[in-house]
Image (cartoon, rainbow, N blue to C red; front, side, top):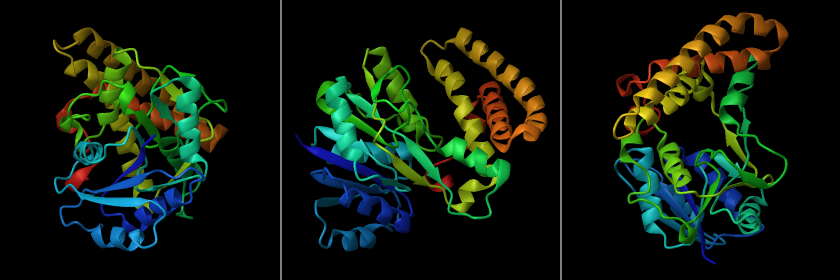
Length: 304
């Protein structure tokens, strides 16, 4: 059973080192770690060479000079022949039982795609109150405390693919999402239409280390807005365009803006968590309403 851990990276060498070392510490080591350097200047090459010294598993460095989240993921998938591919982002660190838990869930649940929890860590001590609650909400992915089959797929950060059990497209991830993200949503929607079963590995924790620049109000609201655009854009990208779906999600977005936008100031009197939820839903609602790609935030690549 061949297993690879895929880590795309873009100019985060210190964080990358933490991610790789967390894989070195797994109770079930992979056969290979594939690091895809998406920096046109190949800025991670030396860092990976240093990490390779005395590494307990094979460390493969791949340079993908064309920035974009889909480009990086596709290059990683093409580089390895491993049956199982576990994806870890370069700003995440995995708990020691992470990989073993994903693989156990794949076997137990008979689910060819398995997701695990993501727990946001806030290194910036200045983040407090509503902004801290908002950051935790946006960057964490929490689910059931039980390992189980789930109906709704999640994102690629902390996900396991069994390639032998999947009919993956070529390329796996749509290049249209290189800068705006959502490449995983497009893929999982396609797999869901094929009847693929998704699993949740409750013990496969990873920790996402959210650095200070990503905790600014501008970045937080921008990301919520982009998440909100997803459902409407998906309907707009159908062939032929699903206008009924577009109108439906725009209506949902308008309602979210009106209701949660109005509730946010009052929710602050209840708790920071409640206010953060209202702000997030209002921003996502605005994204559903203003779904046009021309205004989509560039979250990845050279223009991020």
